[in-house]
Image (cartoon, rainbow, N blue to C red; front, side):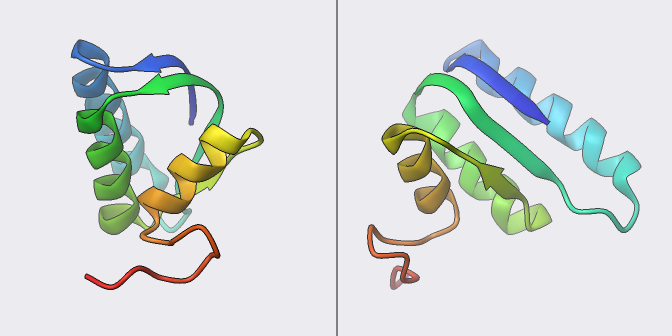
Length: 86
């Protein structure tokens, strides 16, 4: 699944709806979310990415410092790649 632009406001709900739809049709496949086209994610979008990772074990494609940070954060990892304490 590819996300582009801003994941903010009403787009967070749309992203959630789309992810739920995709997840219901994946079967045994894992969800992979491409963040390479994302330019901004608000706090609710960041929570959604974390929730999708926890709920579905989603992995992320990232290529910029910002998208790499978002991917690590969603996966509960710190800057050094270690899991953060809860």
